[in-house]
Image (cartoon, rainbow, N blue to C red; front, side):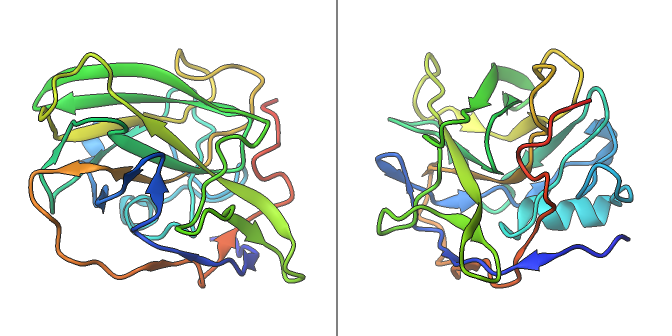
Length: 225
């Protein structure tokens, strides 16, 4: 696989705010590949990821991301270690790298789809993720300068009764389907978090970005050709 440039970034803890709420868990299971469409990579010209490689990226390390150059690309993520439910305020938070693109999200309770929407990560940086102290989270280069913002999209599943179980979510990051606005940059997906659970989760260690985030010069800004 093509060797990538790794940059040093700061600590990203599970207790970071999600608007007025606090994340309890991250999606920790890549659903069977039979429910996955498209080829996923870490760069537009890179090698296709195996299911194991994809799972490691989208469920564990916020210092990594995936994209897809496939027309209709999506994958499903579950919450195997916790019972995730809906509640007051934000229900889910999607973490991406950079800005100025769209991604699609479907939410399932059992086999029933309870939400289907296209979300935008705005170009103005208003979705930049914050740490627990309210500071911007961004990927820094070797000189300590911010190279790309980390964005979070907080999602309140309006119209869905509180305490509805969320079994899995489907992320659309393709380049030419109804979930993608032609001309925007590639969506760069990192992790998905959930706010409400039916039980207090076991303490989890802080997630570290010390391993760095693989970035290329085009990150978050390259337009689809």
